Image (cartoon, rainbow, N blue to C red):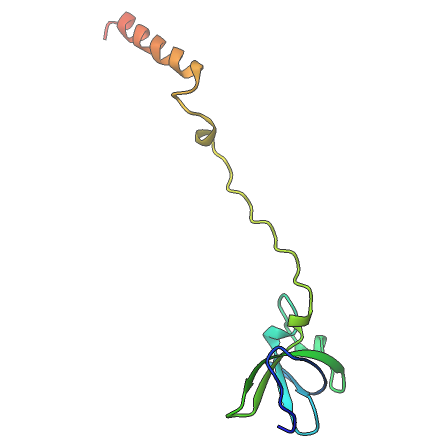
Length: 123
């Protein structure tokens, strides 16, 4: 690596190759990094070529620098605004969630009437 790249740094690079798993980006004459398919954008990416083309000048954020292997992990997604989270649906309330036998006057009077009815029926 000619220049020392730091994790978190945002740099401009040129797309030099497209693979099914991501895009290679030249950061300078001697340094190349990879934008993995999962770091291209938010959401599902089926084909890297739908988002990047060889020769594109793009801004990337450095996610990781492995000095042993000289591999640099890059991201374009990290420079984008995250889409709003979908609200998780509230669980549906059932009738039992709404009714409390101890609170409802209607149930008390039914319980009392039930006793009377049983007595009247002779059981």
